[in-house]
Image (tube, rainbow, N blue to C red; front, side):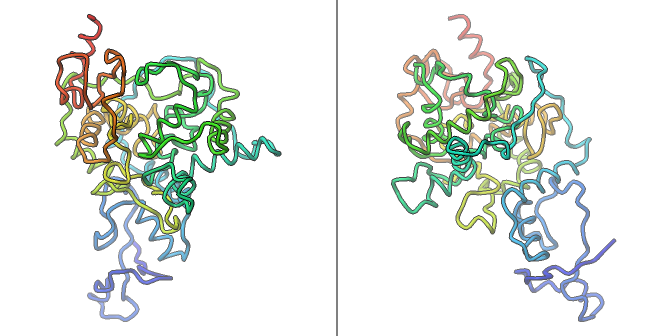
Amino acid sequence: MTFQKMGVFHKYTNDKDLGRFKVTNLESDKYIFKVPMLRNVTLTAPYFHDGEVGNLAEAVDQMGYLQLNKKLKDEEIENILRFSTTLADAELTTAPPLEVEGSSAAWVPPLMKDIPQGEDGDLIRFGALHLTDTYAQLGSGVKDEKMRFSGNTLNCTSCHLEDGAKQFGLTWMGVSQMYPQYRGREDKVAGLEERINGCFARSMNGKAMAVDSKEMKAMVAYINWLSKDMPKDVFGLVTPKYEGPDRKANVKKGEEVYNRFCMSCHGANGDGYQSMSAGGSSHVAPALWGTNSYNNGAGMNRVLTNAAFVHSNMPLGTVWNHPAITIEDTYDVAGYLSSKERPQMRGLEKDYPKLEKKAVDCPYPPYADDFSQEQHQYGPFQPIKAAQKKK
């Protein structure tokens, strides 16, 4: 057991709790508190002696400033969060992995230091900057309003994890070989540029940019660079196939799962956390609902899509073949997230010109079947799939 001062370089905001001084009456014991262990820290929000800090990202950020006189970078906070995930009790955070199909080719992401020098390399790095720091480069953090294409505080890498190079983390590795491709939502074959613009309109709650703009060319160049040496049949793309239980998602149970596994990073109000060093930039822990999150037309607002992502990647640092949250619990927490208020995208009734192509978990009408909007949003989805097969 050790005791340390809370606020070595900077004063903690709560100066009413004097710590051990209340017991010893020693001046040297003012603001001295017991140091807690880090085991299961991702499961034990809120934080600090007074419980005033609601999420772990903020706790890490504050400790860097108060105790070390350092404003941690977003990447540093994320790395600490990933490490913290490894300290959780294995019995509390172990679930069976989903089955995957594909080759056993090694997953070896390229390194940023290997980007070539010269004009081509500069374009790739420019694209990486806009994909990893989207809010600051293409959102409200940009002074020129003409360059504001993002409408929330997310980065593209809020979903495409580890700079788009995480296996089953909605990676961009291998994506270039998949385009152009047919997409039922638009009922046409489209290129990668249109797919990126779709993300800006939905996941980023913003608007499309010119496909011939430098920014678009740069983002495509980065994705092409990540994809260049990936075989077409490698597994690790998108997320593992997720079926989900044959029942309606239990939103109340999902809230309990959220409080146990997700609140420690994303907060009780789902608004994430913006680090002290961000300077008006994006959230190091992204907002999951509310004005700063993705809108209702985004893929993450679909229960099966969200649940597959959570199962293979969350809490931060989880890998697909050692998941922490069960299939049942990810299904319920995805339903809980879908139930929350978020920005509403206009014109969704025009999605899917061929309604029979509509995803079974698409949460907004119209539909080509007689199943209710509620069932399309929360399930069970198996009856909808069965009806589609009959047609």
